[in-house]
Image (cartoon, rainbow, N blue to C red; front, side):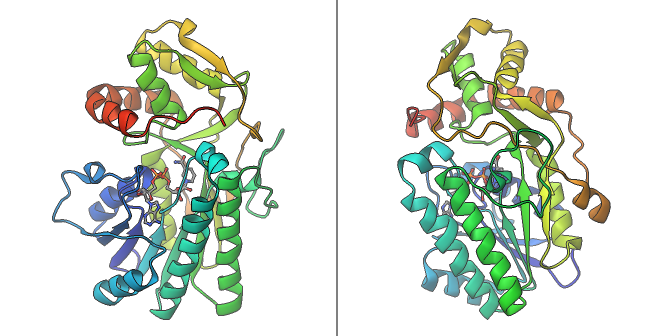
Length: 330
Ligand SMILES: NC(=O)c1ccc[n+]([C@@H]2O[C@H](COP(=O)([O-])OP(=O)(O)OC[C@H]3O[C@@H](n4cnc5c(N)ncnc54)[C@H](O)[C@@H]3O)[C@@H](O)[C@H]2O)c1
């Protein structure tokens, strides 16, 4: 645990990554307060087995009065902001809610955290803020060149966080993880989408030629890094969180089909996403050298675990697919 920090407010704690933070944070001995609006991506089932062990508020981070009430009641010492609209395709259809939650929501949390003298504020950003890189890797000083409304809303929030650090001496840290995968991820994202379609012997859509490259990190590895940043991260710093394991979307889907013993003919190439970044790649030497963190889970092992998890949770997968069917290619 971090000295002087006992209670952590986790926004977006009912989402994919936030719920993993709640599980690991409780194990580390933190008291956890979850604030989540329970959008289509939020689901308390992700926290099942933990009820009674954390406080929960079904609230919107954009609701300033409600946030003040929660801060006054709970008096957290740290805030981890996972809450966000996170699906790039949805941002292409409807950018407004992305600006509202990802930028304005962050500003409200920053202001209240400043007012109530929070000791550490961790902004969960993304590698997408850098835009694409054909060769080499982005380091934390690389310029921000987001390519889609989701990435732009996250980059704008990063700039705001850094402005608070500079202007007010606000104790914030930004983390920029690469693509996460693992249990409890919404089936709109590539890995669970491919698993769920393949399980039904339905065709698996892949954008363009499938050659776009992403860096893949198992969610529990990522959250270990976030907890380490909470404990030892330097105020005002930015940390990339990656695995070095880069793979094209096509390779990812092929491995999933192999694990499931399904025919590669299920792969269906569809019209490419507008503005689709070709390649992401992070240089993570800073977090490795300064905090001693390195990803542990090999991609193929993590993917096998993930596939097995979704096979065991097909009811949950089907429920979420029916409730929020993947949107057509923008
Ligand atoms: N999943 C990834 O691969 C990845 C990679 C890098 C960065 N990130 C970032 O990590 C964070 C978490 O991502 P995720 O994949 O867990 O997202 P997710 O979509 O699974 O979960 C987002 C959570 O935020 C909640 N939420 C949305 N709007 C809210 C609001 N206005 N007020 C309160 N709660 C709200 C949702 O209900 C949901 O529980 C995001 O900030 C995302 O940008 C994700």
